[in-house]
Length: 131
Length: 314
Image (cartoon, rainbow over all chains, first blue to last red):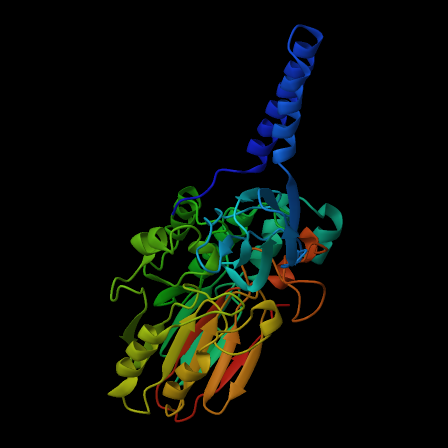
């Protein structure tokens, strides 16, 4: 089963990376690079828009999330129980077993309605609507 | 024991002592189609055990890999359970583990579980997987290590001293919005497996999730259990055992009696009590033993009806 390696550690690394880019951009601006370069960096940072879904008490909060295309959706498990994010129609890769505090992220690039559930607690259902 | 608790609450040694005292599981006594459940005692045969034709022990939900409140030592509590089974004067014929051996289906968790179970003097253990044992690989690792290999789907049956046992899998291919699932293929097999048997054959059917709609809002049930029950109903004595909900619940439906088992790891709340079915965190080490259990069954031949008694651990 293919999974997208987007755990919380990776997210932190990504944030560090973006931060480094911004700093680099700022330093460049002080130097000789035109403001256009900074604008490009700014738009790159903006492209990674993130929305959070919490897993709490065997439920997704919010259960329905509406986002623009290109949004990265991050699920974080706040339960003591593990959960597995699974697309109801195999439209995106399943997470691994998410233990407490683990996160999983999927970037939704195409508009559509993405129903998902927890494959080991199937009464837990949620929807991501991508516009 | 109470005195010890008061003086040394929280100490691991005392905690395990209390676990041992409580007997972290259930001993089943089969008596002529009459199924009796009782906690493990101090090894002395009880009068009720003396006339049993055989016994087996059930443990469940050991959740190896869980390390949070209220139980930081699930290996220790499982080990105590096995020790209590070993201490029985009349050795159970086999053990039954009704699933959630592990917390996250990790190979090292399966390794640990297998290691502790090897401490059992009763060598034969029958397993069915819980949903925690099939994460990421649909149970491939579980079945490779613990499967009976009778059928590709993992389900199986066997006969033991006049009683027919059936192990069912209801934690795979779960559908969004649903509960546990047996599936058409397994149901067809079950129908065929039971078809030629006399209605007088005592049946013991076991699976991880409840095979009755115990509390669907928390996922405590199996979508297609009613069809399975329709095949069991003609039999005079049917006992259905499961784990999953970490507490004792019972239900009698005609000749079918349903029992859920306690966990060797941690308790879960009563149906609908609180926001969800997670571990009960307010349980202290001194009181945890009251919530854990092993089950032991002894069978006595010669009676017509099946009755079941369940004793809650003190």
